[in-house]
Length: 95
Image (cartoon, rainbow, N blue to C red):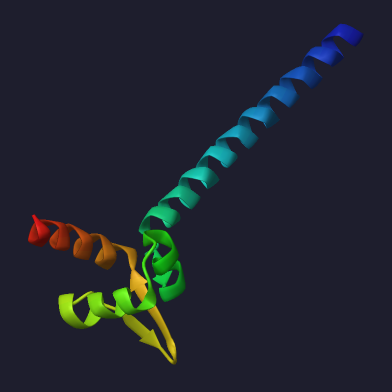
């Protein structure tokens, strides 16, 4: 009698574990999809740090080479995709 009870409990536990595993997998997929579809931004400070350049260099990229920027009040941001496109274009230009 006890053995049957324990088997039922184990079966229930396995079912719950499978359900939780499926839900967690689904949530991870949703999070990954949102991360991929969310645009990435650089602040001017982060852009300078990432590429080890000065603010005047970034300003030159904007004014002379056409790097796109987004101004929000007194803050300046750069889309990662715009920075990637700029760097690819600049590399082709320099070669």
